[in-house]
Image (cartoon, rainbow, N blue to C red; front, side, top):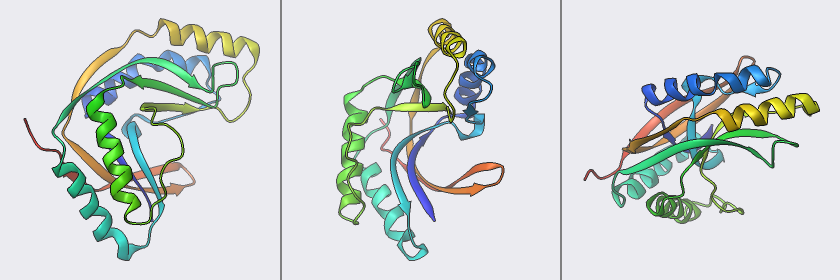
Amino acid sequence: MRLFLAINLTPQVRREVAAATAALRQAAPQASWVDEPLLHLTLKFLGEQSDDRLDETQAAAARVAGRHRELVMALGGIGAFPNFRRARVVWMGIAQEARLELLHHDIEVEYEKLGVELEGRPFRPHLTLGRVKHALTDDEVKALARVARETDYRTDFIVRSIDVMRSDLTAAGSVYTTLVSAALRSG
C-alpha cells in the first residue's frame, strides 16, 4: 500500500478553495488539477508499506496526535514550485505556524523509528492545487501568474486530526482512502 500522513480539509473549506481557484484551472487547462475531494496537506509520504505494518503505522500516528493539541491552520496565497516561469506545481500557501512545524517534526522523528526515511528538504506546508507536466507558453505563464495574484482567498480552520491515507493509482487518477484519523488533543 502507498501511504501518507495528511491533514484533510473540511468539505466546506475544500469547496471554498475549489471555487476560489477556478480561474487558475481556466488559465492553464492542460495542467493536472487536483479534484476538490482530494485537496489536503501532506505531512509525510510513507511510500509503499506492507499490510502487516499498518498497525504500527496507525499506532505511530496516534502517539504523535496524542502529544499535540488542535491547532489553527491559515490558508491563502497562490504560488508555484519552483516559480511560475517554470511551474511544475501550483499551490495554495499555508502560513508557517510553530505548532504545525512541531507536529511535522514529531512525525518525522516518530516514523524514522519505524524505518521511514527522514525528509531531506525543509517543510514548506502547502496545498497542491495542480501539476504542470508540460512547459507553459509565455502567454499561459503570464495568465496563470496574473490570476494567482488576483486570487484573494484566505481562511482559517481548526485541525482536529492527522490522517493515515492510502493512495491508489488508477487510470482515472489517484484515489485516496482515509484508513485512520488520529485525533489531536482538544483545547
